[in-house]
Length: 180
Image 1 (tube, rainbow, N blue to C red):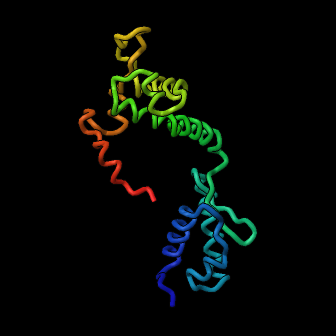
Image 2: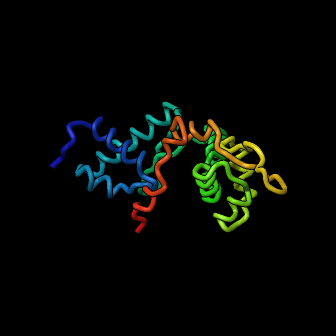
Image 3: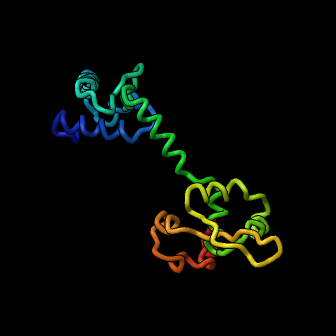
């Protein structure tokens, strides 16, 4: 029983499936999915490939042996490299996130106090957070050596979508989270 009324409906579904699939999809899977004759399916897939080629947009559909995949247009390669570099640079490491959480909940806090809680050196994580403008030096502690004390910034609030530190979840809520 064919649930699709038209070739255009089938094309639309093929596009969606190719878009969400991380791997090529075999023609056998399409044939099972759509329950239409193999020749008709091949014709539809060839039409889709041609439509994407003629459009010359950011995406293409390619055939690899008996499978099909949606890929980025090679003409966009340089832009993709720039985006990936930019996007990767926005991620914080686990160490930086841990350090940021400590500062957010314990501020104002010194580097030595952060390291006592974490149990490891926090130089790199702290530098990363300062470079990203999520943490800043807010003063010096009135103890021998007068170490810097750190706190979060307005950028931190913006990043987490809160207007003040009072909106941070209570630490007691984290104990209730089941991490099994």
